[in-house]
Length: 444
Image (tube, rainbow, N blue to C red):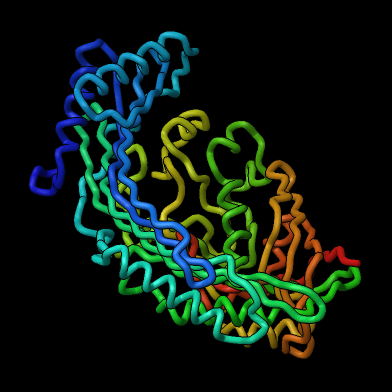
C-alpha cells in the first residue's frame, strides 16, 4: 500500500516484526494487527444497566521455516513485546511437523488496489446520547402493547478500529473500519403463557441504521404476534424460511465448501464441482467490493486479491470450493481468495415478495426462528428446533412452537421452489426468504 494511505503508526510495528523475523533466519512471516475502541450501552426497564468502553489491540504472527509453521499473539505492540512474540512463534515452529503446503500465498496474487470502500463511519455520540438512544428503543417496545410485560433490554454497540495485514512479500494493507448495531428484546404475556422476541439492525454507517423507535416497535410486534403459540402434529409440508433464517441455509452450504472439510473428505459437497446442486434459477456470488459492505475487502486474510462478483453457484451448478492457499495446495488447486471466509454473499431471487411467497406456499410452515445446530456436515443431515407460524391460504393463521424441521441439505437445496426479493442486508449473506417444496416436521 502506498504510504499516503497509512493512517497510524502500525506500519512501524509491522516493519519491526517482519525485519526481526528476517534477521532470525525465518523463511517467511505474516502478521495481522487489530486495534480499536468501542462503546456498549445497555438499558433494561428504562434504567441504564451497563456502560462499557474498551480499547483493544492484538498482534498475531505466523512464521514459516523449513516447511514448518508457528503462531503467536500478543496485545503488546512495543518493540520488546513484538520480538518476544516472534521468538515464541519461531520456537513453536521448531516443534511442529513439516508440511510442504505451509507458506504464504503466492506473491503474484497479492492485491494491488486499495481504493476506499466506504467502511469507516464513526458515530460521534457521547455516552449520554447513546443512553438516550437505548432508552428510546426500549420505551417504544414497552409502550407498544399492554401485553408487553417485561424486557430483556435494549443495547447499542459502536466500534471503530484499524486492521492491518502485512507479510514478507513486502505486502502491507491498512484499513479503518467501523461497525454499529442497535437491538431490543422484550417479553409478552397472555393467559396462555409468555413469549420473547427481538429485533436489531447493524451497519458500518450509523446513518443507515433503522431508528430506535422502529427497532423497538418491531421487536414488540414480533413478540406479541408469538403469543398463544400452538404445537402441531408431525407431518410433511412446504416450509418457508423467512429472510432472517434463510441465510442460515446458505451459510451451511458455505461451511460445506470450505477447503478444510473438503481436503479432509468431511463434507457432503465433496467432489460436486460442476454438479447441479440447486435449481437453475439459483445463483450465488461474492461481491467483495460492495461499498460499505460487512464483508467488503480488496484482499483476503492472506493478502490475495478478491474478485468482483466471484461466482460460487451459477444457474444451480457448483463452480468452486472456498480455498485459502494452504487448503488449495492440499487439493492441488489455486486459492480462491477465501482465507478467512466469504465476502458479501449475494443470493439471486425469483422475483416474488414475501407476501407472494406466502401465497405460493398456500399451506405450510413459516419459520421465523431456528434453535440448535443439528447439522451433520459429512452427510448433510439437517435437524433443528424451530418456531414460526402455520399458514393456510397464504395467510398466517396462528403461531407455532416446539417443533423440529428435518431433512437432508442436498435434498433441501434441490427442493427450493422460490427465493424472495426481501433480502436481509444486515450481515455478510444477503438472501431473501426461501420456500422449500417439503420438509418433515416433528411436532406433538
